[in-house]
Amino acid sequence: MVIGVRYDDVLNLRAGPGTSQAIIGTIPPTNMGLVASGETRELPGAFWVKVSLGEKLGWVHLGFVGYAGGVEDVTAEVIDDLGETPSADTMIELGLIVAEAMASEDPPSEIVRVTPVVTGDLHEVTYDVIGFGDDAVRGVRLHVFGQPSGSGFTLKSIEMMVICGRGVDDGTCV
Image 1 (cartoon, rainbow, N blue to C red):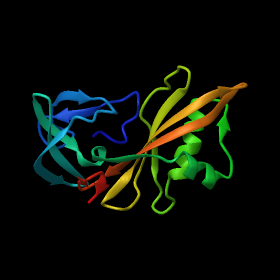
Image 2 (cartoon, one colour):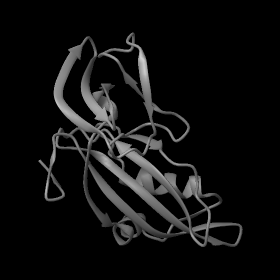
Image 3 (tube, rainbow, N blue to C red):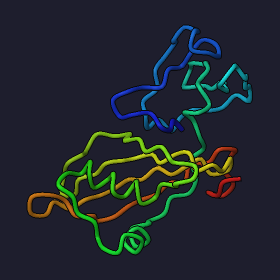
Image 4 (cartoon, rainbow, N blue to C red):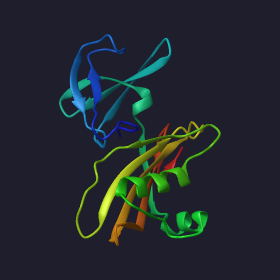
């Protein structure tokens, strides 16, 4: 899966490892359809991995891919950690409150919004929190649902998907 790519950006699929290689395709920030080929190259400052995306075969920066782990509802856990059900003026702010509650301090996590806000009966937004300092668990993807209330939004629920770095066995990072 693609991780840590902003909602208004794409991950480049390249003809070879490295940023100097030709871009042969682009991958949206929430794509879950990449298949690793097993080839990896180390360049100065970065690892690159060969992947297939449908009929295309190319290379991506390893820092922007991971394995989708298990999904669970962490609403109660976050509310307990914060001491209250969070509210905010916007869904972007509400999602950021949740993401910051799940982030690590050492090493500091990177928080990236990977979807625009989706509106409906409930509003929703998705954030990646990556950089946990664990080669098995790279981070989490948080799908935050908010209920419109007054002039803002109140947290309704949070679905958390674990982002694994080395692989997944029965939903658990290995």
